[in-house]
Amino acid sequence: MNDVYVTLNDKHHSMNNLVFGHFIEYMRDCIDGGMWAQILHNRGFDKRKDIPEGTVDGNPEVAEGWIRTGYNNSFQISLDRRESIARDGYSQHINCFNACDGYVGVGQKISHLYKGKHQGYIWGKSSGIGSVFVRLSTEDGETLYRENFQFNDNWEQRTFSFLLEQDLTNALFEIAIEDESDVWLDGVSLMRADCICGLWKDVYHAIKDLHPPIIRYPGGCFADCYHFEDGIGDIDTRPYRRNLHWGGFTDNSLGTDEYVMLCRSLGAEPMICVNFGSGSAEEAAAWVEYCNGDLSTYWGRKRAANGHKDPYNVKYWDIGNETFGDWEIGHTTAAEYCEKLGKFASAMKAKDPSIQILACGGDGDDRSQNWNEVLRKHASEYIDILGLHMYAMKLLQPKHYDNTAIYYSVVGAVKKYEEILLESFFVMNNGAQHRIPISISEYNVGTNIDSGKEQTLETAVFIGGMLNMFIRYSDILALCNYSDLVNGWPGGCIVSRDGIVVRTANYYVLQLYAEANLKEVCGFNAVSDSYSTNEIIGNIEPLSDVPYVDIAGGYDEGGRLVIFVVNRNLSEEAVVSLKPVIEHYGAVGGAEIVTIFSEKTSDHNDWKCERISPHHWCAVLEGGQVTLKPHSVNRITLSR
Image (cartoon, rainbow, N blue to C red; front, side, top):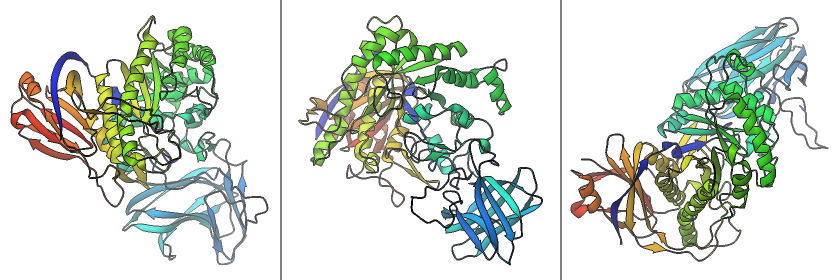
């Protein structure tokens, strides 16, 4: 049993709830495949198949992700760049020159379609009058929906919808012709009718329930190969681009306008990371003007033409993502970064002087302050906020470790990051002409990709410790962004497959803190046993004097005292004595407590079983004490 004695001190400051922010990126299946509710892949036919040399493919001109369907009829099928409605894209050209009681078309096999209304559209044109049908059938060939359309010499859109009475697996969606027609197809869409802001309904609601105060976009590393013009204008005319950092492709459906509208719907502040690596200061300034310029500006008129008359007034702009790293497109030395930062910041603030510039700080996993020292000396006039990234296990060495040692290193890593935060703030403000707060614009554990370990209770205890740190130092933190919001790295706090959602242990911890809506931070003194580690694991060197129990909190808008308690002890409960706090605050009645716990720290939630979820309970606090589970995250609320 670990006895903890807690008192209040006289340290108070206003709470900055932007520390409970999030991050999305065009990476793996974070946006495409996770958030965005498009069911079809390569829906604009803009990616050709990658056919290995020497391989015979019977349908080389059918777009990647699509298959040719039909029988009997004679045809020619090709990808036509000259006729595409998308910039730098293709259309799928189908010429049936001999109809013989059959049909020819293209289709996609869809692994899961869930009951409910679906809606979509196709763009098409033909040489003369051309007939096309859209069909959905079961894996046994039973037609569930079919509708016929006609096209002529000009590109036109045709819409359709259907209602599924039950879930489907391995369905076939087809677009085809039966007669002798010469047609071009492009910009096909199929989404559930109940999607919200283009997102799967359940994904949207899971995000909404997190109360995100700010969301960073579109990267990350991806930002350094992203050009914002690819993501504005009509969604079907946007180019399908290769993701030059993470691999794969995106059709840019969640562009600037969709992103800002999503943030507004969620009540979140937008935060944009510009293309520093392969873009230019002029491009970054144009993006600012597109978002914040009025109708007297070129890009402000462009935004209005795209359906958004009023400026977005995006405040936070990130210049450079991990630019110190050789993995980053356009990486630089610190001196080179300073010179380039000055050009970007000056051009961007010329468009809107009110914006806040986040500069790329040094490696947040490294105690060295060399990069930050150079920035303070040579570029502080351009910096409003310094950004750091923190991933505790990103460099986990390929060797055997004791699992208990890993656990204590992971959950104790917060101590290292607290020291790096304070040192970075000191360095950036040592002689600076204006105050430069810090942002932790990416953080998580970062354990092996696809290991799933970032969804375990072990990581949730780490996240709880990080959030306690953010509360304590919210007076020197501008904002923080958990990485990632949906899928992406394995650390996505929301896991989404075909719109079916898993809320992870991390999700419930992040929600636990954000929904408290703190207004004022209190200082707590906690006397707790501590532990030390004795080896380097991941990015974490040996640690000393890590308290088993970590406490932070403050007053919510209703005046209630909210105390967050993280018990890092793997095996022992914590008996937390709050008597001095209760007497000082004047609490009456019992305490409302929410605990996030599971028997094993390796436990995680999946589609079959939710092992970890918030447990709500009340305690009388006899003698001012409360007993809390080992390896748990807790919120205690007192009223008076």
